[in-house]
Amino acid sequence: MSFNTISVIGLGYIGLPTAAMFASRKKNVIGVDVNQHAVDTINRGEIHIVEPDLDMIVHAAVTEGYLKAVTSPEPADAFLIAVPTPFKNNDSTIPEPDLSYIKKASEAIASVLKKGDLVILESTSPVGATEQMAEWLAAARPDLSFPQIMGESADVNVAHCPERVLPGHVVRELVENDRVIGGMTAKCSARAVELYKTFVQGECVITNARTAEMAKLTENSCRDVQIAFANELSIICDRLDIDVWELISLANRHPRINILQPGPGVGGHCIAVDPWFIVSKTPEEAQLIHTARKVNDAKPQWVINKVKLAIADFLQANPTKTVKDVTISCYGLAFKPDIDDLRESPSFNIFSSISQEVKIKILVVEPNITVLPKNVTNATLVDLSTAKANADIHLMLVDHKEFLNTKRPLGYVIDCKNVWSTR
Ligand code: SAJ
Image (cartoon, rainbow, N blue to C red):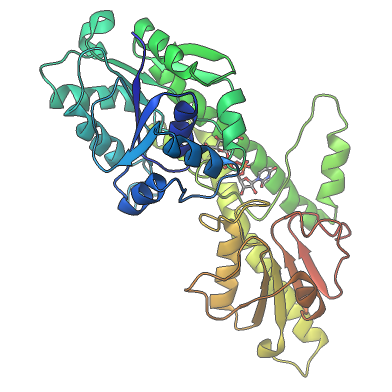
């Protein structure tokens, strides 16, 4: 059975581009989001998130009548759930995933489900979440059968197909990346492949739902562990007076070594989050993954301590000055290069801690924003040359393209990204 109408629940960084790609292939797409502002913006043919090329695709899809946004689900042939899976707001030392958005989304679509529909969970989820979602659907619709009981003859098919696209490259990666398809049965997988083949040019590789869930968590945990290795090396090298960047480039000349780059910490909404979904499920077994999280989470404080040491050094060398006379320039606040996203950013957190803990003057250069967030009051957003000319301490946090190939400033330099080569 083909899919004439496709519904995407959650119109954020993943859901909206996915909805737009189906619509660009002339499928009728109903996007659902609880955020009225997002719904209104999309229905005007505009977008409420920053992602290259997405605005054109959404504009065309809405204008041609293939994409509309609504606040409550309507009947469709396939439903893709792309809602957030944040942490629970509790005091646990191991953050636990909060599946309440998935529960709400499944309960919302349950009322419009019919025999023959396909439900896909795209949200990054702990192992077992797809089976749990199928239970919630079954509880809400006892008149329909689901794969956990009826297997291949179920009325409704269910699969987990995790998204794997890189922010900033979503439109291209949605089409080109291979896709992991984890159906609860073989038929569920086959139908999910048929759906994604509407626009996916990469291979759709079939597995079961639990393995698909774990595959996504594994990819991001693998990157987290590798970055933790680089971050730990940077701290060891600092103690041993070795240039970590030179060290890594030498080691990477070995044909089987490929060490990633250290930085001020790991940010974003995925790599610093997903490993916890493994650790919270298997705390005894996930020792290395847990340690990597701790190493990466500790790196911002290490950088803050470096800044404090630089201030103490500066004051010792300039005994007539006090803390209030010291100026620091911070270069970059986003969670990674060439984006404007300051959320979950170690660089922003470092900047914010310095501004709260140490009463020095702060200049900030962040080429991707025009104003500092409203809650920041004791820092000034300036251009690169002003920051370089007017600070005693220079803290390079993000290797934005505007900073590359610029001259190292005079004064104390703490370079977390090897932009100004010599330490
Ligand atoms: N980082 C380093 N050193 C490095 C590479 C990255 O410190 O060598 C830092 C970045 O500065 C940033 C963080 O890691 O703070 C994460 O950045 P990223 O570019 O590695 O990844 P994300 O979070 O933008 O996207 C990841 C991707 N996953 C993998 O590369 C395995 C993407 O494919 C996923 O779809 C996405 O997570 C997601 O949605 O899960």
